[in-house]
Length: 530
Ligand code: NOJ
Figure 1 (cartoon, rainbow, N blue to C red):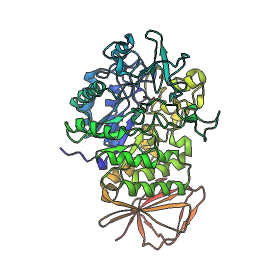
Figure 2 (figure 1 turned 135 degrees about the horizontal axis):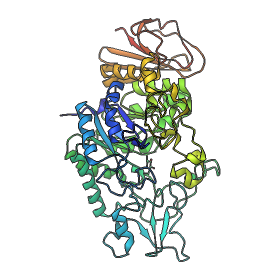
Figure 3 (figure 1 turned 120 degrees about the vertical axis):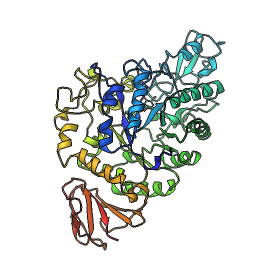
Figure 4 (figure 1 turned 30 degrees about the vertical axis):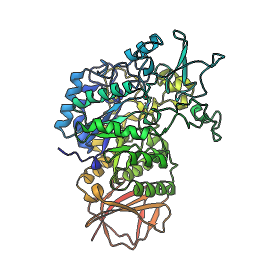
């Protein structure tokens, strides 16, 4: 069966925080199965689940001690197989996190590698001699703070870790590592996954000369994340990454039209390189939108270029948030988040909705003693903490928001009494109903599924206006980015409302575009008569 990835909508589940089925305060695979009907009702057709592999959980599953199993916290391989089956029964595709760049300390490969300089797995990781004075081989920084090198006295060398020191980097220049990791990929493909999200793709290769990285002149000490102190010319976006996409594709295509999405925090030029080095079943996540200030011109100029450059062969992606970044409603405000959702869900390509975005969840408040994230702990800066965006999904008004019956691993967000699925299901104007309305409309709208995107030049500088067109279906989207009412006067015939972002207008009601008003932060999807 051919899968139509170009029209897919991804729902991103962070398993620890989605639904706890076995009452231990941590979400699990069976919890996800219990909520698959919810994903269908929402209108998404693909789930991406963050890692559930066995792990010491220092980085909550991104530190893996066995690539071919499930951590007991999340369930068993049988539960995983059930999840695939249950998802497929509902026509939901499953993307899993594939983490090629590093393992946990505890992984048998690293245990062997660290055991002696002559162990056959020594070169599976990146080992270097100290400088003559015993210091680190170069100035490279770990993304999670401090040096990228850790000294191991047992064999008198340093090993490299791009993240925590307990997460040593695999050496992708060693063909045995490549083979072993491709076998891992086959292991999961055989179990029926539909695609992979490749973790930290940009970090996999490092330059072979191991020269010091230069300082970043834009770095502001005390204000920026310490990792930004250097310009990472030797540790990020190395040219070897581009052909690697083809290596992954070869394996994926042994199993049909599987999708791969790469995690790369890069700007437009590198983003486009990644697209062009891959094929139409690969897309890099585009994180640029949520990094922009809330400003119409910034959004519009980025999207105009991105949409055109990606073209119709590849799949434009739009991400508003994930487990590593603060929630969109916290960053830009709740009404603005409605506009952002309307934008994301009506642009061409593949939107990714991070669990809870659809009920307008905001960042949780985490006190110092509740802090779990190793990054924030490592750098000693609570601002870098990723716990606020990982608080449990808010299902209802029960004690632990219907997530669990036991105290959850992170506190429940304070606004859960009104920001929860059950309440929003029955509130006709809720954020949840906005997502459902747009996503279900999208499924049967050729203009949204296949149409072109064209932004309009209109007099009103606070309103983002664009058309989505496919054959005779013409949709006009109007988004008021400002906190003031905006008058609209367009030389366009009367149009029919599909929905407005506050869900206060009846579907099918008429709107006279020659003379109408948009409320503060109000957006519209309109159908134009032919
Ligand atoms: C990116 C993941 O999204 C993040 O959560 C993780 O900490 C790092 N990669 C390391 O695997």
